[in-house]
Length: 292
Image 1 (cartoon, helix red, strand yellow):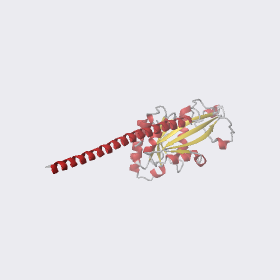
Image 2: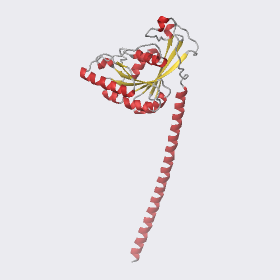
Image 3: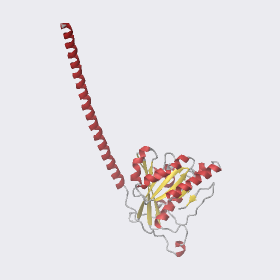
Image 4: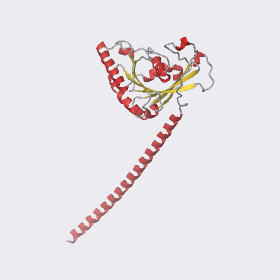
């Protein structure tokens, strides 16, 4: 009997000892859990602070707000005023010798669309190889500038190319803010990129409801190699999407410089009511221009 009582006492003692150790381990785990939660919270707050500072930096990097005004022309002769076109020239080759920014009008343009659809190639084709070397690249965002002359004024296009992957979504608000035009781009040979356009459009309109929307189909040189019935289907869908977005539709090719310069000329004419008449083109097999 005494032997049994001793065994029970020893067993209970070991049980209490084991229970005590388990309690200590549990308390340590709880304390570690709390410390880890606090650390994660601090990291999250720090990250938000850095993001806020970075967005403020980008917002302040713009040279100056857009000044909407009528641009003057080199000549005031009646014949030139009635011309249907206008010329935008690069001041580096026109020899105007501008020394101040008093005549500078800055226009911010945003490029949105999926990955690998030709946004960067389109932008490089417009700004030129020299400006590409001066571009500013950061996570999910690529910035390039191009300055042109028009009469007694200069126009500086500040082009913000947003990457099409998920990590780039955080750059959409800062890229769209204060933009005068947003180019929604898709690959003419990839219908899934066209289907993504409406999502990009809805996201952009959260942060900018006044920018001129333009729908651009890239890689037209590859598109014309597709079967005619597939071309017709893509043209029909693209025109329907452009109508929903209230956007003008352009088919373009950076490789062959099709409609690249014309798109920026269209933006300038629309902003400043310049006397330029853009002709639509709805012929299958040709670069589409569908005006809104």
